[in-house]
Length: 328
Image 1 (cartoon, helix red, strand yellow):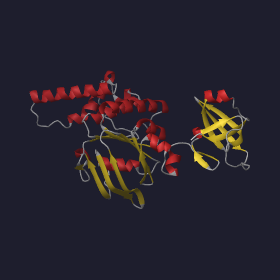
Image 2 (cartoon, one colour; image 1 turned 180 degrees about the vertical axis):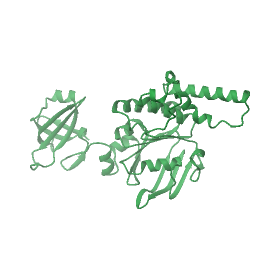
Image 3 (cartoon, one colour; image 1 turned 45 degrees about the vertical axis):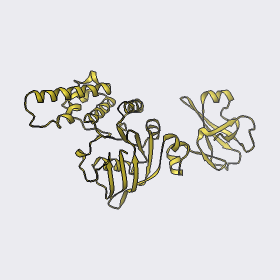
């Protein structure tokens, strides 16, 4: 296993950031640490990287006890949300930096140093091609878009061939469209390089779309670990269910809005009758708000999500009488 986290706890004064966390992150997987702000996910990532020290517990990376090792000896690549770059250096020089500082300082000014420079240049060219920035190699970071700068940051982190790649909200400062593009790109990149990757996010869609496994963290503790499907379909707690998507209630049962079937005629036994009080079309989705017949004034309404084609096929509209039942 690539990363073993055993009994890790961390306090900042009276605040408990992590409380006896135990976690195994398998080699080659892309794992998301998902949770609300202040839940402990970034603290855990920084402890893995060696940027923070745990109060108790151990960190083992690829069989080596890294608990007391400094960051530079853990062979970890790290990308922050606001990644520091050398503004006066070209894209290629920024990517090459980590490789250059590892070059022995006393390497003779002969064929040895020349060969090392050629090796670095080849590696930089490979990485820029991998992150689709070859044509921008001579530009300065200020001449790149936000998404391009983050791809440069990832290339720089990968340059030293880390055992583990750690990403702390890497796309958090970007707009929604660029975030979506980079999520797709990160998944494809991981499938190519297969480096063990851990990324922190509070964005449920990001975690569900990109990760092989998700670790849900709240108030310093792990709530649940599983695949995106496992967590979404079989949440272990109300917190996980609420955090991973919208929840509504139908007949006292909590379920997802898209797990409700809508009929415009009396349905099966137990179907809940009501009236559509609001209908919104958002992209390919249609969102209904339904007031059940038994609801008190100002009481709980039921939220339903369906496709536009389904809404058109059954002819439901605002003010229509409907019958609701659980599809799952």
